[in-house]
Amino acid sequence: MLVACHDCDLLHHLGVIAEGATARCRRCGGLLRRRRRNGIERTVALALAAAVLFAVANAFPFLSFDMKGQVTQTTLVTGVLDLWRQDMPEIAALVLATSVLAPLLQISLLLYVLLPVHAGRVPWQMARAFRLLRHVQPWSMMEVFLVGILVAVTKLAGMAEVVPGLSLWAFALLIVVLAGAMSSLDPQEVWERLGVRS
View 1 (cartoon, rainbow, N blue to C red):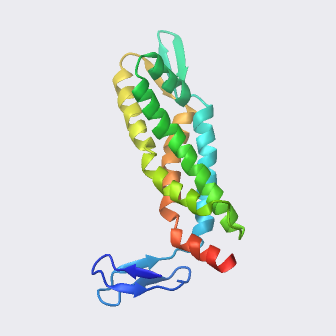
View 2: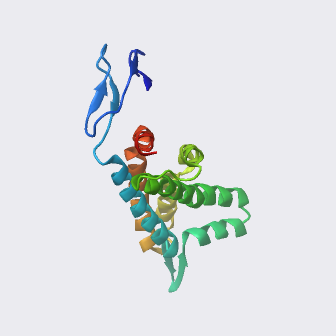
View 3: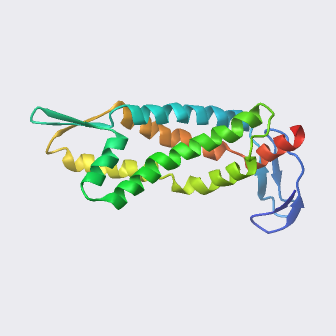
C-alpha cells in the first residue's frame, strides 16, 4: 500500500503492521500509521454498547416537566413530533435526521461490517456499506442536539421543575461511546483482515 507522509509528503510502501506497532516516515519521523491492539474487537464492543444505549435513549423519557403539579414527559421521538405540531417541520426533520436516524444508521453499519469481519467473513456489499458509514458519520450531530436541550432546560428551570430522565443520561453516554467506536475504527485493519481471510 502506497502512503504519503502527512508532514513531508514522502511516499512509502507500507505492508501489514503488527498490532501495537507504529510506522513512521523515514525522512521526517512523522506518524504514518498506528495499529492498536484488538482494534476490531474494541470497535465491535463499543458499537454493541452504543446499540444498547441508543435503545435506552429512545425507549425512556428524556425530560419531565413539573409545572404546578402537572407533569409532562417527553421522549426523543415525541420531542420531534412536538416540533412538527408547532409548525416547525424543517427543524423537526433536521432533529430526526441528525439525532435519531443518522446515529441509528451509523451503529447499524458498524455492526453490519465489523461483526462478520470479526468472525472472518465478508459481509454482502461490504465496500458500499463501509463507504456509506463514512458518509453518514458527519451527519450524526447528537452533541449539538444535547447542547440545545441543555440550553432550553436552563431557560425553563425558573418556570418549571425539570427532571432529567434515564434517556438523557443514556443519550449523553451514547455520544461518548459512539465517538470512541469511530475513533478506534481502523479501516486499513478491516481491509487487511479481509485480505488475509478472503
